[in-house]
Length: 112
Length: 111
Image (cartoon, rainbow over all chains, first blue to last red; front, top):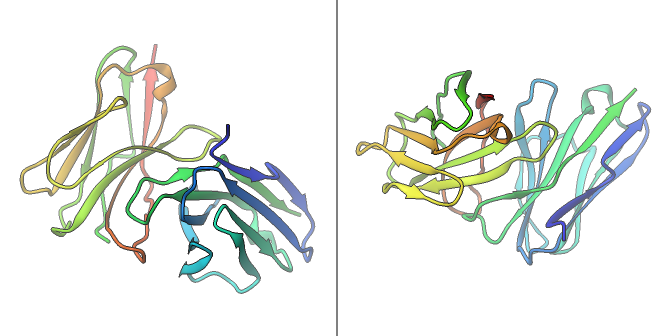
């Protein structure tokens, strides 16, 4: 029944590794997002996709690459992980860009 | 998108109304006011939004001043489960518009 689900919930890895976070929504929404919440709790948008097309791409290192195989999925792949990438990453979706966002419960990434 | 200003924190007794203020003095005519909250260790949750008129739903009421420079989120009967960080956000609609979260206000509901 989960509307927006992310996996894994926790991810601990070493610097230099490559990792992926998966997101799926079963709400039939057309738009999906990735947000990053740092240690100071600021929540910042990273990317948004509308119907598999990239709409918003904030100033994010190109080590971060979103991939949307279909409109129900938006995965986040991160290459060459750095200590500063440690954060909680939230996936979200909405029916259209003006509708309320539905968030997943986050993936806590820890880079050691 | 216009910036918002919220107090850092406030508290409220359980069962009483919680009134959370937000200033958005530079809001433009086509910008909506949104409220979200984030309970510890969870993703943000949508509460309510409005443009000009006051709005009410099953969770809360949103009161927007006539000049739209400020608003108040009202939780009519706060419970302990309402303890969270509440974000007031203003944004214009459209595909390229971003929902930008500030620091929010931490509401603590005491027994």
